[in-house]
Length: 233
Ligand SMILES: [Zn+2]
Image 1 (cartoon, helix red, strand yellow):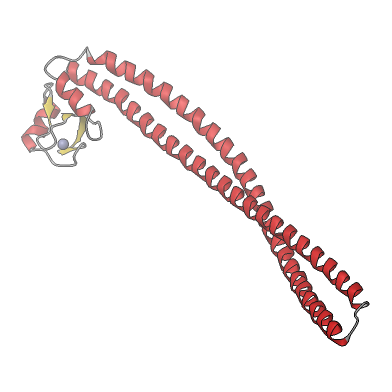
Image 2: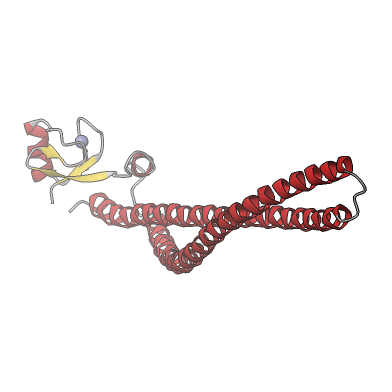
């Protein structure tokens, strides 16, 4: 076989490996980004729930303080009620006491609702924390695995790229520039087989005489459609 053809086939194999590794590294990188994004989302959800639980607790505490002060007021009013001098004072004390009692009932109701709400929010927070911890453990393991994979593929890619670069100098000046241009563009295929009369690079049939020449001759030839080097193998 023509020296250039044999070398190009060999170089194409190295190059195919380089591209496969590059694709795999890109995929692993995007999986890592996906996991990291998920972790950030989980963390954000936990932080938001922590904030709302904190707010509910402080609101509840405020209402409890309000209730205590209304209860004090009621006790005061009752003491004062015992010392009224006339009916007018008794009526005024009575209506103040009624207002304070209504306020107390309202506060008690609000506090019960707030306690229920706090319970629901706390349980949502506990779930979110549990989920975030599980996801973090899982994605931590996945990220470590992907990073290990990237390293492995990068090493393989570097090795094959070095072989490719080294081998380029063995190509004749007549084919080297075009070969480099083709490997650096599109899907990186510079030399392809012809299958009968069909170019495996573009799936187009080459003229019969060209296909015949490729199978018989030992010269470097190119597909009349896509321009890639073709060989019969
Ligand atoms: Zn072609």
